[in-house]
Image 1 (cartoon, rainbow, N blue to C red):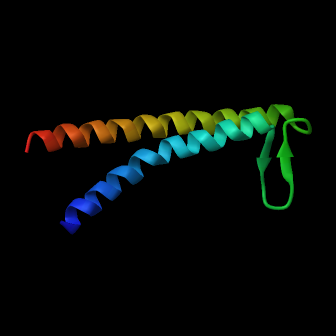
Image 2: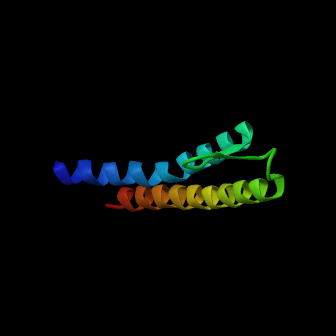
Image 3: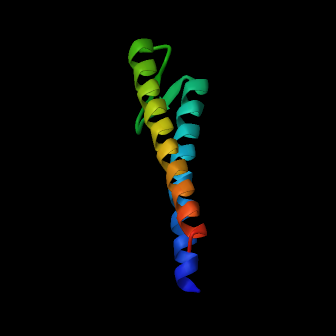
Amino acid sequence: MMDKFRTLAAMVGMTLIGPILMGFSVVCLIRGELPIRHSAFTAADHPILFYSIIFVLLYSAFKCAQISVMFAIGYLRGRSRR
């Protein structure tokens, strides 16, 4: 029973990595600032660098979400064959 819960927790964790990173990137894009420790990196101060960083974050988030979805589909297909 514990193995089933661990497997389910691993699957849920893997499928949430992409959407969480994607949500963080979109919120930073909407707010126009990237939270850094001591000061906020804003789009008004450094627009080219800010949008470059945000689009790299968005691209990596989309790729991570794709991998997460492919993991979930592969897991569910493999599970149905057992």
